[in-house]
Image (tube, rainbow, N blue to C red):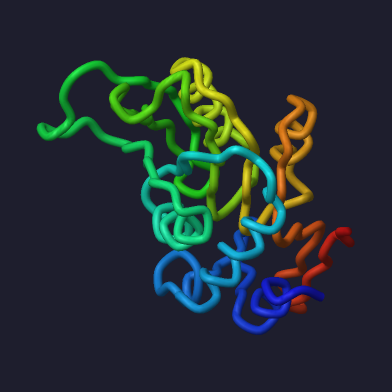
Length: 194
């Protein structure tokens, strides 16, 4: 069991509807030492890739992406879920559906922050159905940039997102893949990884 799987077993809570709550350390209260380990592991897994930018989606991916970016020494761009008055100029836009929030959002990235010269690592906290990632991939493609890889903290292996993204040919690295979880017993089954 790796460091992240151990933390999920220790502090993760399974709720009705196959929802995994990790808000005590990942996506509400943030354990920065854990984020540093996550960033170091992403750096190890994507070693040798010419990554010059990290892309994530607001809000939960931002903290993880920022700490990971310190290991890569690159800037972070995050896709916004709402148009605001401080966004100006041309935008890349994609529609994404959120498994957690059960709604559709348009996500927006200013064209001045992504170009064909960028080699992008996409980072997010969860992968369930893959819709958010597909939206971020569309934005990178619209910019003419290159997706060098995708780093996910927790993948729900019992949902289709991981298979969909892998079948598109991207290097997808999930630090913990939960293949099953039982609300009644509070137990997890993790996929064996190399």
